Length: 615
Ligand code: AGP
Image (cartoon, rainbow, N blue to C red; front, side, top):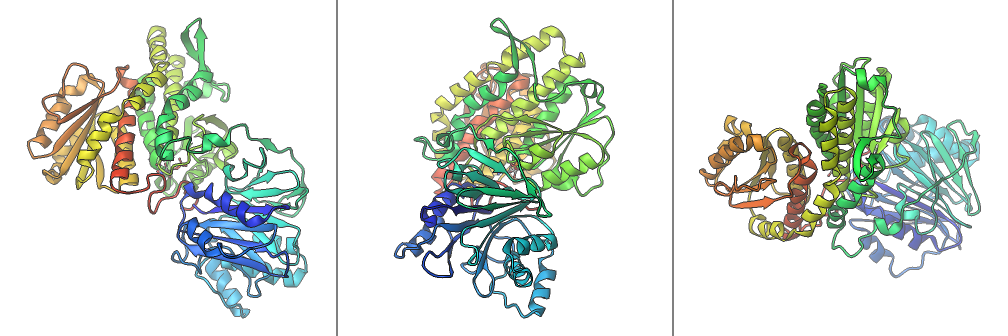
């Protein structure tokens, strides 16, 4: 969703802002803009444009915007269509205050009506514009910009990350956050704000992750932090220890392809610190970051809540916990969970999964669970994210920055964490024998290597995609773990190829969906459960005899699917109950190649945002 950048220093602000906005493109956006305090006159130079950042660049190509304090924004429309007018920054009537905002002001209609009663004429349809006018109102009352921002924040309901500049204070930039993410980058003689770390990394690795309801005032030589009442806060900055190059394409055509290929390393990084070795042999799992105490051993149930791809990881997790630890698991999409007055028990373990750690619905579910007294464990990829700060305990997926909107390596590392938890719990609850446990650990240790085998041999998938990318209907089917993997496979294809794709538990086909099958249908069966091969093969025959093209993604090496499938993608052999970490990779590649063949940009699918910070 929207991206914010801001700069105070001695460089020309505009190129720094544009450069920063490009590093936030992955969040999804439909327009872009900048506001710079003019060096030569008492005004704010606001330039904005609907569409890609390049249109904004074209717009300002022939002018020199001189000024070294400014704010920039990529907008993902919520209130008002994507247009030049609705793009941020927004200003007060006289143009002396400019604001960029990420989030939603829920009481904006009431505030807007009140401001209109005061004679304010609005230029846009956005909720954000009320903020600029309110700051102006309180500035006229208090004569002090910081106080005016504070007074404004006290009246806003909803979520915001904000950057504010004012012509009367040309030496500073004011920032604030509630719900939506915002970081402050601490440079030498220059300081920055941004919605995420990548825009500041080429200048500094020292950052403040702003907490809920905090404000920051940035000058070129220092930054002051404040709480919501305007009291100064002192704290040490955090140090970012990952590299910008890990957030860049590194020779791949797209971030999505790079991130699919990075899965072997991401698995290693997520797995190795948690595996205990006896010589060369893995002997145990150790989570240093969570207390694996009595509450886990005596838990009556695990409740998993997440959205989208992270929810699909939770569905695989359900199969893993139930199989290895014999504990009941309820898994739910966060947007449903939060509104249905869920039943939580004292001895439930509550797990939220979120790549970004900023998803609004997931956060709301987390808060609900905490209010109900549940212990909340978060699985997230983003250190310093709101989820990581609000959960009782955090398990990080060490996938590295995921830039493509469609999640790949974050998903598979979420699976890895869930499997590790399920195996450890199985050991502690004695539902896995010592020998079964050790055998599974030896198998899980092979996952990174086997992942590499799949990504290094992708030509079969690429060729198959080149024959199927025009199909009008695609169905993924599977049983047990494979039905869970089907959900994520179908979502990946929808997200980046825009092909109509659904997932069904294979046994459900004959209860309705088979009516859709004709010769313009591709059915992909995920087949990693040998005990169910025969049943699955029967389902494949049923669709094939109705004209569908069929493909299997399987660990089978006996030819079980050769007769019923037009194409068999063979993945390396692995203990079947762990195969979900591998079987998804051909599906990710298939989605990627279909996207390219259909002329789409797989990194920035239409209508989607990387971080969904509104409900
Ligand atoms: C993933 O490909 C999707 N773009 C989306 O479903 C995503 O998984 C979902 O919005 C949840 O995001 P989170 O993991 O950051 O909470």
